[in-house]
Image (cartoon, rainbow, N blue to C red; front, side):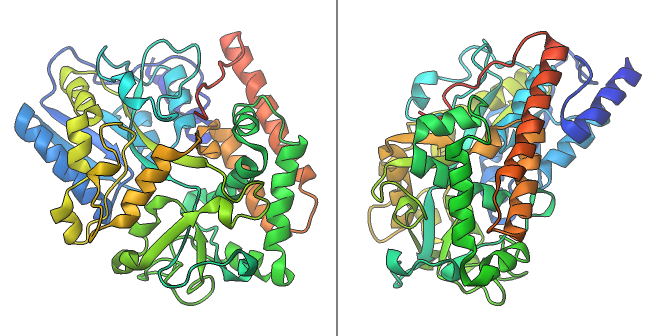
Length: 442
């Protein structure tokens, strides 16, 4: 069995397409008094989460060891390969969690851990239609259909050419995802949530006209200035210069620009200059948007899932999903006065009223309002896609930017081939088609 697990996990590290159902080493019926949690938050984002875990420790008498890393997917794969995964892992990509569940790596949550009525306002509980048990919970969300600018420099649509935008494709092992965000948001604002959801779930081909037009729109935009914007984007890290305050407040190539299409988490990149940043909804400035006052918004989420089952792990999952914990994590006005940037919750118990109305962080209040008042919220497309397809998507974004004036059809045909091959492999292994992910847009 150990050899079978090793072989399966080797395949997982490459494609997240494993060779068969396996378990986790170390499973035991004995209570676990120490829990390990793997998450994506480091630095300023890590501290408030660890404070939240400290509250759980004090109330439950359980020690929790948190490991924060921007390479949490790779760290998790390493733990699985060694037969020693964390008790709980928080991942920003739902597509990976779907694969983990299909391969038997995730433990189902107890009944009552998730109060589904508390998440009626969005797509946060999306899962394959045939999945009966819950295996993950949304613990943090971000708004992505926004454009940041420096306060006092209100953006003008007539002057929003590519040279004024902060665009960087660099992101370590996942370079290219900032470009996928552009294409996804353009598609959503041009064609609407129904077309968007069909594309995300594989019901629409990558070579269908709405998808091609979204790539062409972005390519035409990035071709401005003889393609200089595209070349700089390929050579720029989305986080900005080392030791700087993000692209919006940075210097050098791609830095010190005027507009940035980036999620609500971008303020963590802006460091001490975050209070100087403001935003407008992306339809007002996005190239090709059909309705400048459109109310559809792209969002992302971080999902917690249990890789080792124990009463303590179930308790921690229940705690993280609770209204009380979500409100504690969102902080209070005293924390905001210290300059701490709050997180945003999918929980309906953490609404706009939780954030200061004046004299404090009014930007956060407006972000919550966007989440609450959107016509439809749609999960980040690449986060939802299977890992192989997501990886090729990012690669083709980079290839496209190398020549943004090219016809994208050839690149999209390649992604479509990978999608079809992935579907065939699934049918061969499971003797049925994969269940469609429901509630991608809601």
